[in-house]
Every structure is written in C-alpha cells, then in structure tokens.
Image 1 (tube, helix red, strand yellow):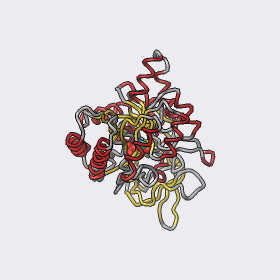
Image 2: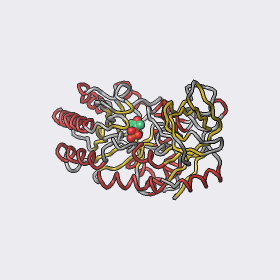
Image 3: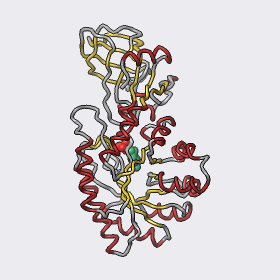
Image 4: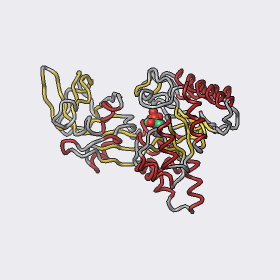
Length: 380
Ligand SMILES: *Cc1c(COP(=O)(O)O)cnc(C)c1O
C-alpha cells in the first residue's frame, strides 16, 4: 500500500475523492495466486474492477480473463485487436471465458463471431446458444454450496447436480461441445470447505458424464471466491490453495485443464481510497464526519458487496466512536455508524480506506450530481 505521504501528495495533485491503484500489488497478487495454484490458469473476473489499466497490467503478466458482458469483453479485446486474425482467435479461445450463464440473444449474436467459451446452466440457454452462438464452446455452471460466503450466488445460477449430466447430453445432442464444468462457491469465501465440496461434486458429475458416454470434457473451472485479507480472521491463501490442489490431484486426471476466475483476490488490496472531510456536526451527542466520498461512490461495496471498510485518519488525536457519512442527501449514504476516529479532525483533513479495489469503483454512480472518485495509478 502507498505510504500516507504518497497519498497526501496524490490528493494534493489530483484532489479528492481519489482512488489510488497500486499496480505493484496487482502483480504481486497475481504472482501469489500462480505460486500457490501452479496448475490453475487465472482468468481475472473483470467485473470486480473493470479499469482498463488494471486489465492491461494483468494481461502483461499473463492473466486470462473472465468477462460477463460485451462491454467487458471489449475492454479485453482492445488489448489484442492488433494481433493477426488467427492468433487473435486462438488467444480468445485460450484466454477468455464469458462466464455469465444467462445471455441475451443479441449478446450471443455478437459474441458468436469471436468463438469464445461460454457458461450455461439450463435448457433454454442451450436453445439460445444453438441458435445465436453455435461456434461457442460450453462449460456447464453447477450449483454448489455457498455457505458462509460474503456474497451468495447459488440462488441465482447453477444447474442442480441431479440435472447436470442431462444438460450436458442435451447440449451434445444440440450439436454443441461441452468442454467442461464450472462453479462459483460465493464471493469472499472464508469457509474453505466450500471449495472441497464443490470440487468433489464436479468430480462426481465428470465421472457420471463419462459413464453415460460423454467423454469430451477437458476442463474444470473452479470459479472465483478466493478471499482477500481484509482482516486477520481470513486464513492464508496458501492454506486454501493446499486443499484445492490436493482435491484436484486426487479427483481429476492429470491432463485436465484447471481454470479459476479470481476477481476480488487480485484487486481488493491494490486500491486505497482517499477522501476529504467536508463537514462536521454533533447529532444526538455523537460526532459525525461528512466525507466527499460515500456509499453511492467508492464505498458502494458497503451495500452491494456486504463489505465493511474502515476509515482511517492521517493525524493523531483523542479518539471516539463517530458516524461517517457520504456526501449525498440520502441517509442511506452512511459509511459507518461506529468508526473510531480522532475527534479533532478538521474540515479539509484527509482520511483513507485500504483494500477497496474490488466491487467499489466498479459500481460507483453519479447520484445526486456527485461524480465518481478520480482514479490514479502508481507503479504502473
Ligand atoms: C463475480 C464472479 C467472479 C469473481 O468472483 P470473486 O469472488 O471476486 O473472485 C468469478 N466468476 C463469476 C462467474 C462471477 O460472477
């Protein structure tokens, strides 16, 4: 993370609200992922933070990409558009997965020209893909337990285990090729058992498909969910990786390709938000600070991502429990009702929040006329 001195200098230069992305941290996170999961190709989930500079840095270190809309696809495509056609085609096939199980007809029509790998989880989607994107490769998204994940996904997506092989055979009969299986254990999964259960479930479906005559699967996509170290209750990535490696080696053949779609793990720790105090009041006896960034902006993860961010001061003073509000007229725009901060902070003082790179800027709005924070990149 950049030093407070650097944050102050950048805030002086660019103003606030500001988000500082440290590309050295991005590269380090990617290296950590590869170090502990050497068999796994990492497809960065662009939705966690679609900043093109982040996508570029991860591209440069060899990442693949998980996209879930055509605009996300085009952010990645932009990096390879000057490659010779054949090479570009191979790159897309090898390095992009369109990992949204439900795609509009128009999206499929657009996607078909690029021949990408796409996920599906139901019969209707097979009919849509057959009609509008027959050149795609398929991965069946399985419904797996999301127990204890910070963000639950299994209620919205995933084929039930009992119908999985039927859906594979149905796609096969429709003339499509199912390349493998995918799942998502839920975002910020600190319950490592979720991965163990999901890999075991995928292995049993893989085997059942083979027993029923379908032998063309050659990949397993273990999805996202890898937890960012927001606090010291999150056990080390190394421990999770050890369990995942053990299960994959035990249950799957050596030649099967293993993919993952880390979003949060790669970007969360790479960004720091810097805001200014724009107002100060005492309400019902409690000190309230008003910032120029909030829940409709960089702190959107409080609402959409169920993520709690600490606000830290850059100067010392007697501390008390304060409320921290964002800049808009809406009371929902509350960053924290219980943040311990110096009571002596003044209007114009800077505060900051660490580890705010995932699902933050990504879902920032311009509500109430307040534009999203300025983003600056360091160590690019
Ligand atoms: C959001 C999402 C991801 C990224 O999840 P993280 O928890 O940020 O790692 C990966 N795959 C799919 C299909 C997703 O929807």
